[in-house]
Image 1 (cartoon, rainbow, N blue to C red):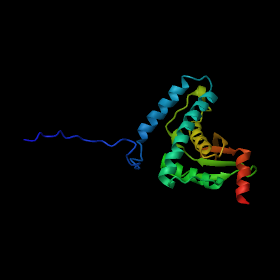
Image 2: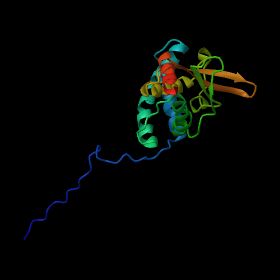
Image 3: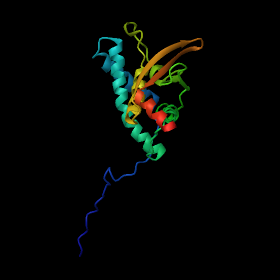
Image 4: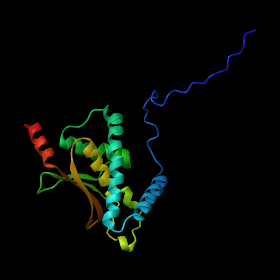
Length: 194
């Protein structure tokens, strides 16, 4: 009589698994809760609004560096952007859709400075459920998004200074992500154009 061999279930190694898209949506309430916890955690470790925005920007930077690799692999078959306008279009459309479920409201070039671009968002998700206390009156949680954009641009070899600004207009407030590219990026762009 042959001994019954134990049934061994072999689970594939995590490295051997396919990189499927997985579930692409995160619950809005879960995101809001985690983001508010990030703000509270950061707020306890700073003294000024600028320091808090800097902490949010640093947290966003780490997310941006990792997300660029993931989104590039999933959406573009690992092809990286080499031209400035293509990269900005990728950010304001593809990346915004992955992160926020819709494209950015607008992408504009500054009229006076050729090295400055703006991504405008009427009501960014990171500002939607945040009530700012009086002592932090000028806080713009869009600094997190600015950090994400900066992380992606740096990882893609487009060094830039990225800041978030609240702009009040006739039809309400909006957040502008201002991107000022380094001189070497503009010089590279001119070389590629010729």
